Image 1 (cartoon, rainbow, N blue to C red):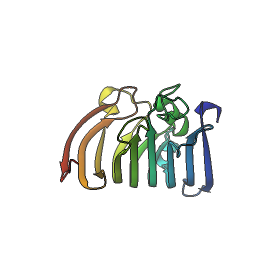
Image 2 (image 1 turned 60 degrees about the vertical axis):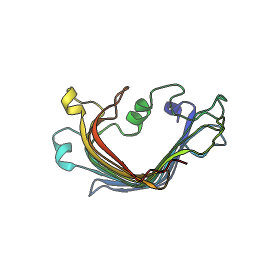
Image 3 (image 1 turned 135 degrees about the vertical axis):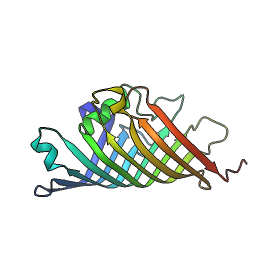
Length: 191
């Protein structure tokens, strides 16, 4: 918990299957200490499978599948209300503490990302829901710039009505993420 700084985490359950090299985490929540906000990050269930073949070659690699994850970012002039995960260190540093491995295949189903600011006149959050995301070869310590770029696909609903899709390559684990992608946004209504 000390490595998460002003944030704290909670995990409901952890199941380990050593023979398969698989782990299942249920009910993870990361939230700002002493905050009344909903958790910054949470998920219902994650399956993590280690590759025995890679372990025999002295490397750690895994496949990760996440179900019902939510990321809620809150910006505010009031520091107690602010919840961006960037208050004291880079979020990628926290990610490296939680998952210090190469992820061969990453899949997210039923995801949610919200951004809100309670100080704005229109308090409607920017919301991406029903997110399906997949990426390959995510590395916390790539050997070169080309290896750092991972192919990805994304489908989601923006503001619960507009279909967003994207496909390309991303380096999400660096301090300034890089992205090379084609995006499509259909049927977006401006109120």
